[in-house]
Image 1 (cartoon, rainbow, N blue to C red):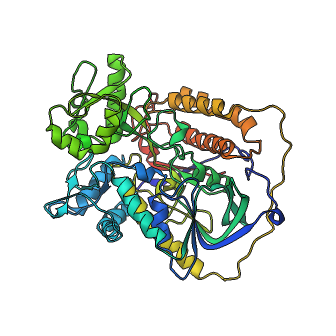
Image 2: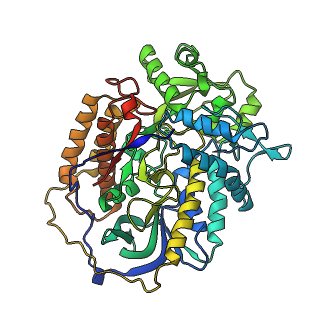
Image 3: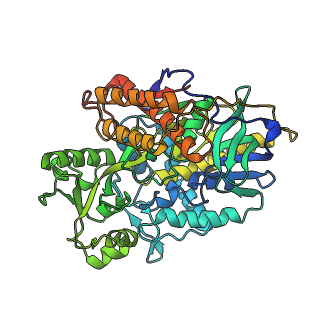
Length: 543
């Protein structure tokens, strides 16, 4: 059974300006494309590959083509490929992990499309790991069967993105604009007509498109402890909110239970596949504690493991727990997880012998733009896929390795839907005299890094693995104060724009988290520690 209808909550209107920077159409260059794709993760590349070759497609990404959360995905892609596995079991596992908030129709759709999407990746040159000529299958938390297809041991995302990048580069009708910051969606008469972008060497450009697909990834940088790369600043969520699109499930930030916790190291992901291979979680005293919290032990869903780790850290008064693989075959461990082994070796740790210090970190934004089963958003002319979208697949907690799968399925669907719509539109679409005035520039300079660090600390402290009404209200008030003097300004480079996007995303996340007075999936409130039937519904927010 799918969740009840959405609960829509108001937000202060207007929350910040409609557009981030001033622009006048007669003073900036213009560029046109049939389909504009913003973001170059797996969802964006798959969407671009679905565009009809008779149409023009343009991918815009603020860094290099391969710099996205997709590239850093370690574990793999979930798909029923073993004859002894069943689609019904993958569906059931997803629904159980999602804590009664998944859309069953969407779950069934995605699970049944998985083998087809895996076949596409193989056809386009992805080299998945094999055993005796067959795809090697791993197991991760929440899965009842071995169904995780992986590449290069623990570098699935990097291999998939390598193959997809080469495939996209081979398509003559797809252009790529790298190192380009997308500031805002351009809207005319309630419809998306493209985007305003900025390049350091060229300044502003107005990109006009018949249809636009948003694939901008996550919001991890709103937290201090995150697995996300620096580019994951919620740009898509924020620009869509400014444009009037509906966002949904923004209170559900998934925390990965095992993030490397070493002073001086980036907060690198330690894939769930380690536990699928038999790794144990122990505390500072060597106690294997997961059985104390859940009969599934280390293979419980991510929300359960993250909560257990936080509780154990509190009990032992220690800043982390440890992942232990010393009981497993050393050569197999190093061979199965070569990239993790190399990362830990930089800090003097042998993953086959030494306990690896880990703790939860912000990993995956379950919420995003509300989309239908074709990837269509609530804003005419705008589509979304991947982490920027809320499709109904994940519910209140994402099942491991369903994210790359969702990116493939909804990237393809959004690309196909946008193509079909654009193909039926007139070819004489043109620029519109849309402009935004400049505002007076304040005399007082701002320390943007200080505000960004303060924001990350505040959100991490008050809207982390555990939260409560008092802490959420405190964070919301801090965001309101910072927004009061940050959002009103018109900055001239990405540092300012990213901060404005982070504040906007944080505002929406906190509003939803305050509204949901229960605990469900990744959203745990100590003042409402149990799920409540009346909250078995989505929370939708719109400007």
